[in-house]
Amino acid sequence: MPMFVDTTPPGQCIFCKLVAGDIPAARVYEDDLTLAFMDLGQVNPGHVLVATKRHAATLFDITPEEAAAAMQTAQKVAQAVQAVFDPPGLTLLHANGKEGDQTVFHFHMHVVPRHGNDGIALSWPRKEPGAEVLNGYAERLRAALA
Image 1 (cartoon, rainbow, N blue to C red):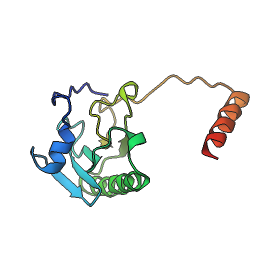
Image 2: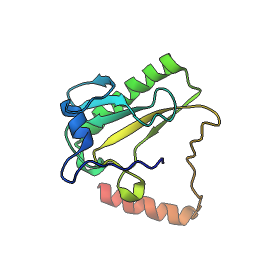
Image 3: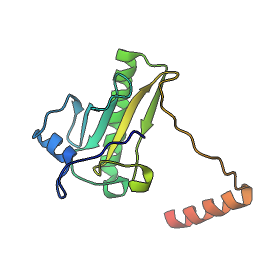
Image 4: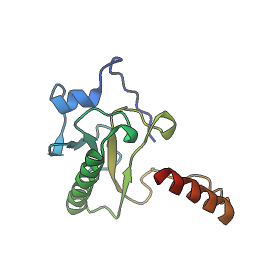
C-alpha cells in the first residue's frame, strides 16, 4: 500500500468532510448510503474510492445494509471503469485497521484498474498449514457463526 498520512486533526475525518461537501472531490457516484470519488493518489487512471456516507471507522463498524451498498457501488463503479478505461484487470481492495494497512479510518474500498507492470504488488507468504489445521479453523468459525 502506498503511504498516505492523514493530516486531518484528531476528532475530525477527512472523508466526513468530503461527504459533507466541506472539501472538494471529483465525485463519481452517490446514493443514500455511499459516495464514490476519485482517489487523489491515482495509481492508474480510474482509481476510485467507495466510502460509506455515515462515519464508521472499519468494516466492523458498518451495518449489513452499508456493506451491501458499498459492494453494489463498487460493482457499478468497476463496470464504469471497465467501460471507460478498459483495463485488463481490476483490484478491489479494503484495508481494515492499522495492521491491515488502513490509513484513513472511515470505511472505504479502492476500485483500482490494473495493468501489467503497473507497480502494484499484492503478495504474501503462503503458509499452507495443512488440512487438519484448516478444518480446525473452519470448525471454530462455524461455531462463531452459529
